[in-house]
Length: 192
Image (cartoon, rainbow, N blue to C red; front, side, top):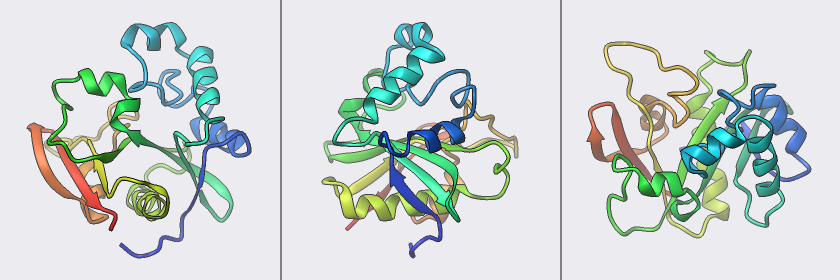
């Protein structure tokens, strides 16, 4: 995986406005603000919109950022959330996304491309830029992803493709380590 032309910056109060630009007025899909995996479904529904936005804004103030904003020529174009599995209680409870083994991983949980820049094939470049960033900053040696693999040439919508599309991860050098459901591979990439 070579160095990407896409640049990423951690989500902090300094990059918050760029994150909002990427997520749009809806906060991504349906007022999520990338809190889907971090909350129970009840908490997520209660916070939908402004509550989820405020929760992510608090996460952006932590020492360990909840993800990165991606830029092309200084334009914020995409977002990627990641963290230790322990940061995602909803994922920990999911029978579909239970751990493959005991290896410590950085979980890539959400990839989102700004409206108006979709359909440009930015997913692979985003994944590569995120992995380059994590190679320099993450304590874990392995990145794990849980993308969709749409069947029969169908397209996935923004709310179902939030974990990414498998082909983009494979192009970025990930390999499949498990397949809990026919359309849901678990993919990994070694950072070192």
